[in-house]
Length: 226
Image (cartoon, rainbow, N blue to C red; front, side):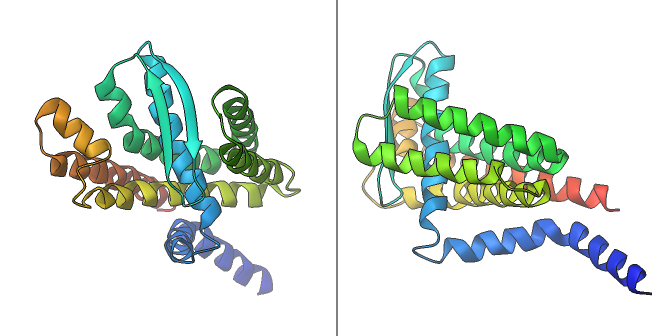
């Protein structure tokens, strides 16, 4: 009887784990101090996405800056301006989706991805961080991933990485709406200036991409537990 109850609880947790993690991510985003590392992580993925887009289109990263407030800046040179600008929010969505998918696929895959993230973060410090605050913030993120790699039970590593992925997706969903601040600044305004397509369209597109990524995770989760 006890074994049967444990199996039922385990099955229930696996089936609804994504939703519990999603609710946890939403709640923690509202807690000022606790949410700071997550804000830094989300901002890093946004800025590194700008940088990767620059590198892929023949440009280079001049420097990456992260601020204590959770804001960030990636300065690039060369490359295709449209793709560099667009892939800040879009790239962060991909990172969040990929992080959840890889962590969900296999425990060893989750561990390898954490190792890759440590290398990327350390490379960012060496190659693109130019101020002490940015180095400290990125270094803190690297330490956070080192901590995940050293977890004795890889199950908890998977859980934490999936939580990170959902947090990044939520940020990709809600952050573009902050561009409606009346200052005509940011990626949306820049794309509007380049294409003559209103900023609203770009913001909606980024939000739709984030919703689509989240929906695909939910759909896959339902299929795997059908």
